[in-house]
Length: 240
Image 1 (cartoon, rainbow, N blue to C red):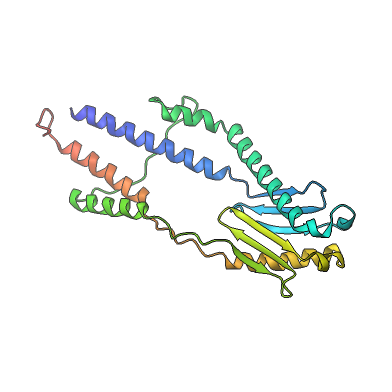
Image 2 (cartoon, one colour; image 1 turned 180 degrees about the vertical axis):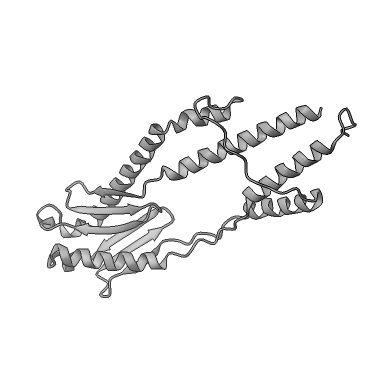
């Protein structure tokens, strides 16, 4: 019975490590940035890894292709294109790394035969089972707590308030540009105002306050404690 329990413990370690590696690869596949343009090609938006714009620019000659009243909509179109480009890069990266195949193998009983040696599970220390259980329950309670409700879109404007950019939980939520002002400005002036508005909006985005817990550390301690308890049991002893 002890040998069977040890075998199951080893399988658990391998499975935990395998899913941990999949999660790491998934996070690493997120592109550092993505670019997009509106249909005219005269408005460009660059997104960061967090999905928020890092740059919005307008090219010279924009007024030959876009009506001033449609400039804000062109920014939104460029943002949507950047999202599409980012998602394509993300998907291509997962395909190149055979992530989908690895996930399918991880969800089955056997490990991915092409994955190579399984990495060691999180290091841990044997602890008093009662104390460990209490800490695990606290950690589970912590991660089950919802993050603070994300506020609605936050706004930023240039000093003269001709341009306003709104950022929400999903990224760029709105962009408004005074058409009368824009019609009399070149691309440099409009880009400068967009940059000021974007910077102000990003500064207004609240820092994440989601609770966290040292789950890797607790997992390592739990595995070490289970292994120690199992190894101390005499062969053929009562497991009840």
